[in-house]
Length: 197
Image 1 (cartoon, rainbow, N blue to C red):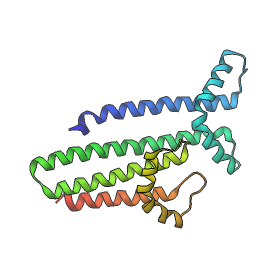
Image 2 (tube, one colour; image 1 turned 45 degrees about the vertical axis):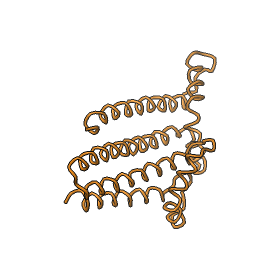
Image 3 (cartoon, rainbow, N blue to C red; image 1 turned 180 degrees about the vertical axis):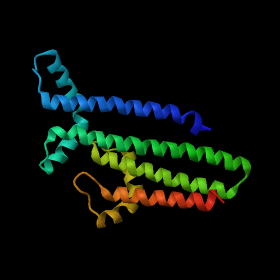
Image 4 (cartoon, one colour; image 1 turned 120 degrees about the horizontal axis):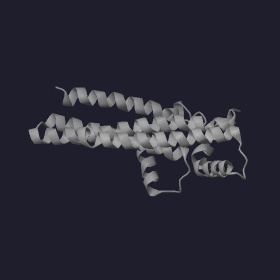
């Protein structure tokens, strides 16, 4: 059972990485307001920290500047986004292990309905993963990539109709959140119709 053996280890590693990232963002926030002597050891460390974290903070600072909010607060927005992405990423991984465990169990017992249910649930989970990848690719600047174009082709028929009705607010694509909620509801329906009976 992958959900009971491997997932807890991955969960600890991912949340540990998030806590490390959180510490970097809090330090960046402190250095944004303290502005130490650039020629001292602390100032050099602050400069290197800013240089290292700039790729994460710059899009958030640009977003805050559009709303005339102090851009020094950008690390707080980055922390919030990282928290949301960490949570959803672990949910997707948990779903993947759940599907693998469920498929192996339903195939060994010969339960055809449960097998179909786990396959549908897995496909919906894959769609959730693609939507998260699409969201991340919009937030950060990536070089053109064939995988990202494939992800856009898969998610465009679902995202674009919702986006026409609910346009993005700055860097935030609310249509993706609405589509994710609908997919989660569909997953619950699939589990109740195919797996639980």
